Length: 243
Ligand code: PGA
Image (cartoon, rainbow, N blue to C red):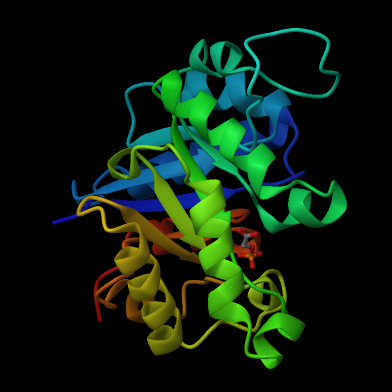
């Protein structure tokens, strides 16, 4: 069975002291989670070291919210793979719709980030997904296929995660219906053609819909924004039981 990856992306939330409080509530709640899954948190850069220290020896793995494609250099506001590895970071989110939208990140840049991540042994979580307008115009599949082809070029698809995140479902409370999310994840799997590819769904995942989402045949995990900010809610998600 493909590994399950349940990831919480804190985005621009959580000071170090808030992260400490979160971890002391969260860790006991996930201590007995089944072994079939990675439980991952992606804190802001300032809290990575704090979370890494507290999470050491626990069920929680670390992700970053970005990684640059150069080893080091004059790249203000960026972060290198080496800096992340020092804190035992295992995953890195690239191609999230927010940097795509606010900082005009291209599929080519996303691909560079993901390649460098893999080159250092980090597992990229490559996010793809269509806007509302693209879906209404019937372009969703074409857009996602382009993001997959360009974003994954030259990557080892057995060592990465694809997160299907329809943009209209992110932070809106509008979850994509499970069968439709599963259909798109299945298409992604057939386009990529790698047996061990882990595919997540993301977009308004919450305690109330996790069990159904995780019972879908092509959904191997979830990428959670808002609902990962509450330790009890995210623990419920991490402890999902297939419906
Ligand atoms: P959301 O965010 O769970 O708040 O919809 C998902 C994401 O941005 O990955």
